[in-house]
Image 1 (cartoon, rainbow, N blue to C red):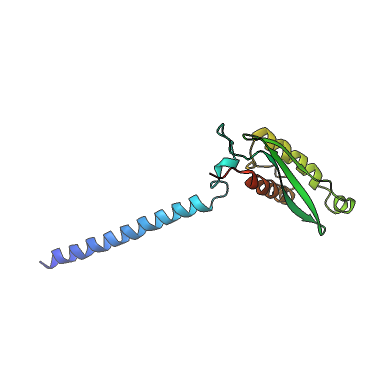
Image 2 (cartoon, rainbow, N blue to C red):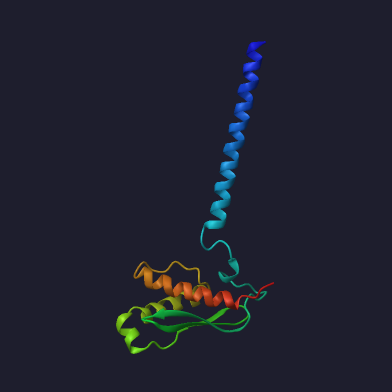
Length: 146
């Protein structure tokens, strides 16, 4: 009778450990789903035929050398039409010479793929990241909220 009691206690322990492991796996999967960038809002990745944007021009601001520079995105109901940056002041061009050429390259990629969620080149990742975040912020304003 002592052996059966020992076996029951061991089975309870196995069930507890199994439940804890299962809970841990579920928590890890949920964390990955919610924390991996670019997985949350798919509508700015690939506009569909149903229309995901409110047509117009939307902008977000980057501060360079204590002066604002606007990043503008123009959209139709179903596509990204243009991405550009307002004219930079001469002092901004001197201190941030990579912003204008990177913006042109990024705009071409965004228009080609119709998505702000692209993997830009590894050249100048900080500059590209700043510009890409500004474009995403402008696109978020253009999204049609259901």
